[in-house]
Image (cartoon, rainbow, N blue to C red; front, top):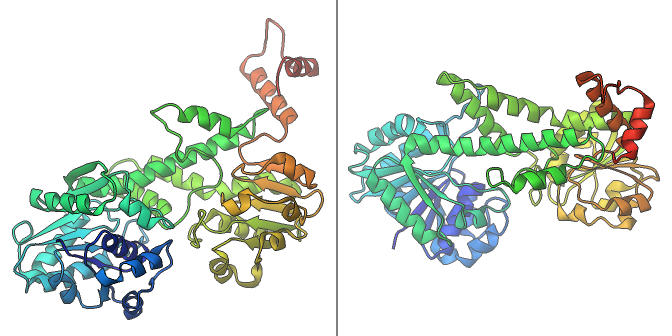
Length: 479
């Protein structure tokens, strides 16, 4: 039976190690942090991730950790490398941690006679594995890639908060192979590990590296398009981005995923991968216009929402923010648009109280005493003059009348993801607004009439300029 080692016991690495062990395989985790190693060897999760500690404890007999690369390599057949590749100042990815891991593995391989497969799972730019990392492992081992050992690039398509589930139930398995033997070996490993039978795509190292970052960049483009639709819907009478998106999503060329319209994308992957694709395009003399535009539009998304609230803003106003993490079921606030909104609100001298089921401590560390972190939803809403529901978390989807009535009578509630019942909100004395929906049909109708006047100065030979025309238009069915 194949034995595995996993280098890097962060959220992805520790979860991968536990997931592989759950499928009946022996796994050795490797990390430079002795505390992470100690925790795993005690049957505890070295990082916070859904179900991680339970899966570790359930498979404790097949799972251990060490700081010794030689121990891990000698006692495994396949090594996954899952180390950070942080963004650098130019927008690309640093492979310094991967270089160190490949060097350590190479030194361990020098004393190993059997074939060993090394699999890089971290996100890197095209060319990094072949030209940046394989020479390091060959030099450190004194061996030749493809003859004495194999190398693959195989990133995982997972999301924080569901890493174990996503790893075992992927939409596809992507394998960038140095040679056929390495790719075939890894394909068989995945067939044994995965709980499902996903399609497998084997390709060159560079094609796989490009596929990884371009997949995330495409998703960010779709999110940004949906956010543009949401803003357009706010400008037309009866506008509703849900209606538009659901119809668009029925076209098989488009699909419904990531076409909701709300806040921008955040977290540790989407923003940086999009920037990295633009950087790579520039470096190989390809236009970087599309990724740059997507990134810039995402960066100003919080300002679009603040602009909608501007008529109600005043110094000292109390604003309650429900949701701090970059997505539901996560404590991560990295690149969270909720926190970006809070920064804008503070610049406008608002008094901000926020609540999140998981991300409160991280937000407190980020903002200190400049905002108040509430312990409950009701506490967060107490006395609020403006309420922002920024994360589509079930905890906020089911707000009760008692919780809503904690806010001031007449308070503005902006439902970014259109989760709440507008009737319930209104019955509690709040004014309901939603991202992606018109809240002033009269002004929006006037705007469209003006647009038509500019485009064509006559309708049936007569100017379309008077109030009577607008009234007639409204009587004939404008919402």
